[in-house]
View 1 (cartoon, rainbow, N blue to C red):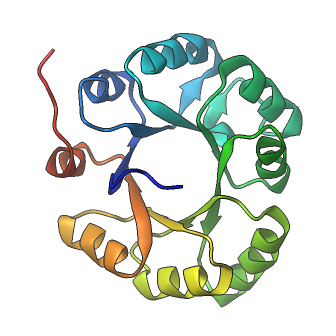
View 2: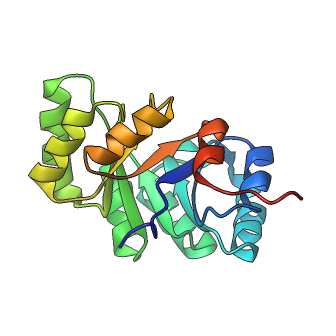
Length: 189
């Protein structure tokens, strides 16, 4: 499993940015900050353009981020993947056969230790480490878990991206549209 050499997973916060990505070489996208009423049209549009979408279920407004909501989203909208900080969400998404990304926030060594316990329980397909600029921790988590790492948060430059990739990240999530342009091609529409 991988992202077919796609180093950046564009994290979409605005519909206008999604519209640009539909006409790009990016195959895999992460949708953030969306309202439940927009899901059907967004999923239809991305499917039409052959994009594989990860939905950050914790950030779907109008929907509780729990196992029931996850089951509903997986059945009704069939996303390629689900991203969440919640154990029950990851477990339900795995049960539904959806690719899972467990997001972990690292603020100190205690949060890292708690994350290891969580990851043993959920065994997601990928772990998104925030902040992604913690390159030593990316290497450590990958070695400890054997699960591919996605780096996100505080990725501001091409140098940040390259350092995270060299540390072992499988890909980078970023909502920085300037960085998207450096790693993907866009056609005008």
